[in-house]
Image (tube, rainbow, N blue to C red):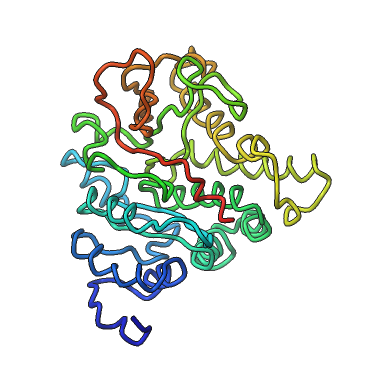
Length: 337
């Protein structure tokens, strides 16, 4: 397929910015499959910079109120994934197809390096639609470690747009619309899952006896936990710079623990626990959730057991799995190396 033949794809409501994401990330053979992705899913591919983060949000508020009045969800029907070009990484086509198949009414966006840069500048820069956070724009631009960059980006996207973020080496095993029980749907604005419980798994990269996954997150735009996490990630980046006595752009290769502590699951766990603790003061430590075997709710936060976003995990003593929503291949697609 040549670039001149792309117009023949006739993808309704697909704008060039969104299509360019696939041009950045896919081989021509994979690009040819976009027709299949589109026709197997009724949702349009999301234009990369869809709705401004503006002061006039009356239309959005009215839309959300209408959703809530009919038992809908404040978490938008949007899927976000990140893939910084990584030569030799296995094809992600089947994963993307699976996400579209399980989300027939959702929009889908795959962010590459250039489109991610544009997103951050537009929504966090000094422009008309920006939040005036030059520190965030400069930190994102300077970050060269792909894991740090990918971590920060997912929080920035969810804070502005909301929806479901998931790494490209994940596969949904349940329709996204069914993730939150119908009776809870109007109230849940953040969905997280345990990724580590010392009762079931172990590893040197874990900072707490229980940690939350950030390879998959579902959130309403503007959720306080996500906003808190953006600031926690910025603090983590500054701490890394100080600890290594270098500039941010010189932090290329780092020990895994440095990453997960600065912007990854350790930092995310701290932000989530602050949100949970604000609702239930007795929840003072992640270890309070050890052995979780059912869904728990803390205000508008829904917490899934360890198999929630790791449905392919067989935990000791577990019975029939009723909570598995996503499988994770642990290929490290976020590394971008």
